[in-house]
Length: 314
Image 1 (cartoon, rainbow, N blue to C red):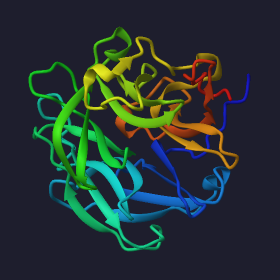
Image 2: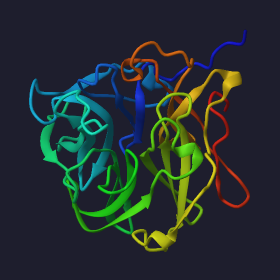
Image 3: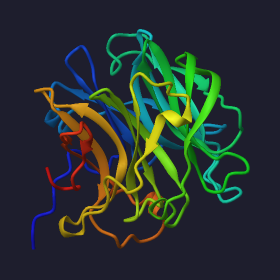
């Protein structure tokens, strides 16, 4: 039997790596207990595997953000550190959905590991509904916020939305619905589009996302737009009809997704993602800790489009 591919970091789902100007890679992800926000840093990607993690924020015992801390991302916006995450008031499912809303914490110190973090509150959207998986990015010196949310009247668990931000904790102006789960591979188990992340290359902006239930059917999709287009105009975006990254059974890599992007020490593009290495999950998949963080090279074809390859292969 072939050896299973080795994770960069075991039992860390929804991984996010930020390569900062201070020469460090910063890593955060969902921890199996979903009880707080953990950071680690290293001078190399491989170094993250052995870096000491530090819990920089713990959930309160009660209240609207006291359970199920999901999918944190660390960003450096407007000269300060921010972690965007989702949290719920309880583990209860209402109307077939968890009760997550989106929040942020911030740190004004240069070192976010040792610095002091402040709770910023909720990131409000037009609907008081299930929402999660926010990411931010700058484009033409403007800050954008992209997230997943249940929109009233639209079938499914979550769609992807995009808006500009007036500050690192507040969206402003028009909101664009970028994509809904509509293709056969996006609606297996659950109707889900979630986990957006952004990469700008070759005159285009690429937006990856994940779809379907978080079992072996979980897979990644892709949207893209020209860099000089209006990102809030839905007509600027093209949606790839097939998944760009999906389970690779020969390597025992199942349900890859919730990715982020970084670069290695030589400036080559790297895909960061989580994956399970078996399909037989006992009990509630939510409490199965074995979604592991992996990395692989991200390549490009002659047309300037990303080539994701297969999980477990470089």
